[in-house]
Image 1 (tube, rainbow, N blue to C red):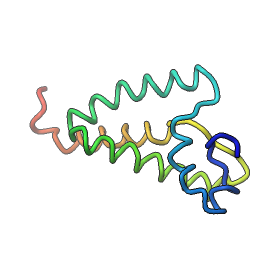
Image 2 (cartoon, rainbow, N blue to C red):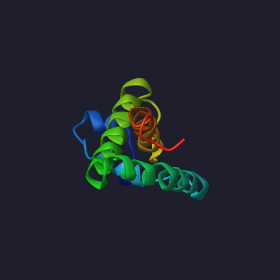
Image 3 (cartoon, one colour):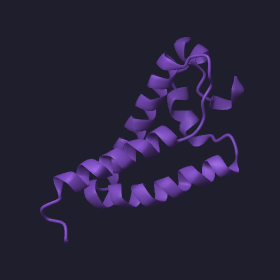
Amino acid sequence: HLFGRLDAHFVMQGQWWRLITYLFLHAHISHALLNVIGLFWFGRMTVNIYGPGRFVFIYLASGILSGMSHVLLAPEMPAVGASGAVMGLFGAVAAGIWRLKDSLPK
């Protein structure tokens, strides 16, 4: 059914795996490129602040929660892409920088 994109109808019928698979699909090359750039910038910082294990957790948790929000708030629109997960990394980096502000070089 539609190659794993996030579709509220299928998610509500029990296809919960779509909350993960949609993170790896993109509408077009520029969409994928923008997510890769964001992942490169904020992913490296997230790994430096929290470590690789927590990076994976933050990425997946952000992506799944973003997908759940999308299903609840815009069920008529299918979704693809990792933008919600990348924004979660951005938020984690901002929180990490705030937490480490006294130990970072000026």
